[in-house]
Amino acid sequence: MGLLDGLEIFGMDGSNMGDLFSDQKKQPTVQRTGAPVVHKETETKEEDLLLAKKTVCPVCDHEFKTLTPKSGRVRRKESDRDLRPRSVGIDTLKYNVICCPMCGYAGLTQNDWFQNILRPQKPLIRAQVTSKFDPLSVRAAYGADVRKWSYELSIALHKLSLFNSMVKNAKASEKAYNCLVLSWLHRGWGEELREHGAEEGMQAKVRAVEEDYYKKAYEGLTKAMATETPPVCGMSEHMLSYLVAVMSQKFGKLEIASKLVATILVSQTAEGKVKDRARDLKEELITQIKERKQM
Ligand SMILES: [Zn+2]
Image 1 (cartoon, helix red, strand yellow):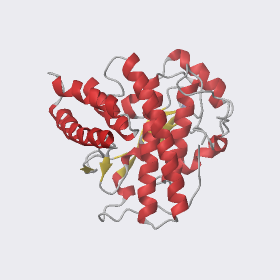
Image 2 (cartoon, rainbow, N blue to C red):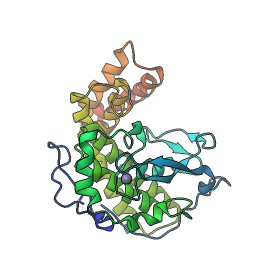
Image 3 (cartoon, rainbow, N blue to C red):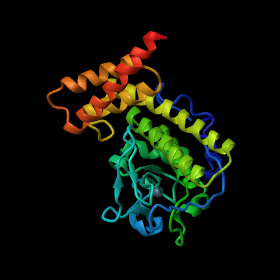
Image 4 (tube, rainbow, N blue to C red):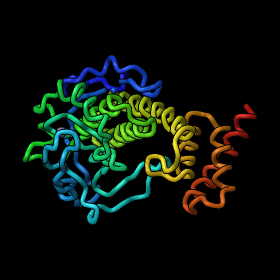
């Protein structure tokens, strides 16, 4: 998979962007499938949990409205163990991105990354994004009658955001988090496909892409942990360590995960909830390491 496959719909070509974290220059992906989004968990409809919020593009000053979850209405569920947020009746992550329908500048709402573009980065966006961007390509997201977004649409916009972050030479943490959200979105999409009984081939494809973005996120977060000063991606040092520990465990790097967990557990400043999660993870790691030695 190319991380930026499918950007042609926006007028971009992501095939020559180089490596994501090497030293600024990279790539993204898009797919198309049908099933409409239906959440049956409660009577709450996704569109009722969203509002159209006025936004001003920091690159071209265009004013437009973008869908955003109503914070007072959304009920949180327990997050996944890797901190992926979950809510009742809506996957709020889908709306974690903003794209200016005029100039094509896109970014995550997380940490105000969309708004916080630096002055020297703007000409890069104009030259490499706006010059090729087709405003009609985001009509499905920014049309006046649009009430909610599908996973496919949100994923496409997050790829455009990743492309923008590469163009503007964003920090490793910003690009890594974008990949993490893309991975989580594929997880959410996979759950939806399962719920709708989609064919296994499609589900497997989505799982594979989830994994690809997860690897990239892991690579970038590991790099950010070593080179950036906390908070990174809005996370405390210990929260980030916990997240990277969970990801390390997933990729079979049990020793790295154990070391990270140990630093959290001996820390005087780690938050209680992070320590609780770290303790659970430690138990699992002890068992896994034992099993591995017996093999
Ligand atoms: Zn704009």
